[in-house]
Length: 545
Picture (tube, rainbow, N blue to C red):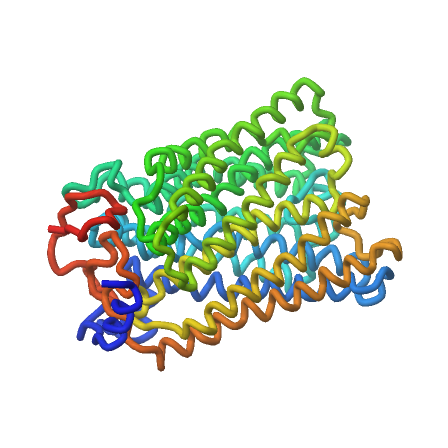
């Protein structure tokens, strides 16, 4: 049966009488739930609120950059706005979005488990996330922090007059949420797979979350310790980072980037897992090079811990160390290139079905490729010295994080929305929003590559007159991008009330999550699933015992 016919049939299907959304009503039942699917929705609401908060800060400083003069905000206020934007978007949206929302919902379903290994720990991770967010928001309300999201010392630990200690406390607390989630995923994937679900039958979404979880568990404690040291030096003048007390400011950069560059892969690896599910589904083909894609996720996680030094090319690091880190940074690009090549090979001569999730996946591939290639530029010593701390870095980072992570996140939401809610969304509006986001994103950030190459530094509220045209283009693109992000919010709400019923498998996809009802029952499956074939058997009928 074709996907179109399947979707038509699914639209007439009725949802199960009892499912995870209607078993228990009331706020208490949600706030005390240990159902991984409900916890995923709690995260969905939370990260959506943080996303629009961070986006509001971006709107304000993009308005400032419409004119060369600093005429809308004072420089200190501008610093607090871009710091708030970075903090909220990275620690409270980009890092948790896919693992905490889609990962929480799908990992047990994809491996045939009833729940995650530690359901109460899963709920605790959400509460820890919220508590960390509250600390950060209180700091913002009381006056904010002006250090940038990187908290570079000794400015953050000694000189800044803003609420650094309160802010790093929020980030410190939130880190435990990542650790608990990663630990839960690792144990679940190891111990709770359905009979027949061997390692080489795991969906690539699971492989990407397994690799991400390793980074969360191994890397996040390093950031937590670094932030504690910043707070201690700020509160008690310990000589850790401030040279006046015998400290070394570059030490903080080593500690911070040892986590924060792998954190880039915490953000992007789950999005890669989403694309690895969407592409074969809408190509109607088995994924090309399954083993290479699976192990490239582990390679990215491992190599990601060895490239932090390319952030220190201009920070007193020796040329020889810089050459080593430059080589390693280019090496880590190889596993990413393998994924892009294999996705493209899967699409080649496939029976392509153009649906909204595929539009987001194609947008991810294009934008991530641009971000990855410019990453090779900034991993090269002489080029990085020229573009360091310019808008070239801002553009590169956003092509990876926004062009990659958010396109993957939205693609995943559109792909699994029928499974999460049991409802279909309006396909026309969904395609339109994907196009608006793609156009708005490129209009926002591509001019910043040019600005950076021409020498415009980031983190400044004022700039030379000759850069105004490109900044106006960027701010105009940001307004289009914002509209593109609002449209899905509207039609997702609409679909929950008015959308046609989706049925169990509206995409005719493969995988255990599509063999259960939509929305799934509380225990996920009415029977114990058994797996007897690969995860992407699109050339044959799906067989689940």
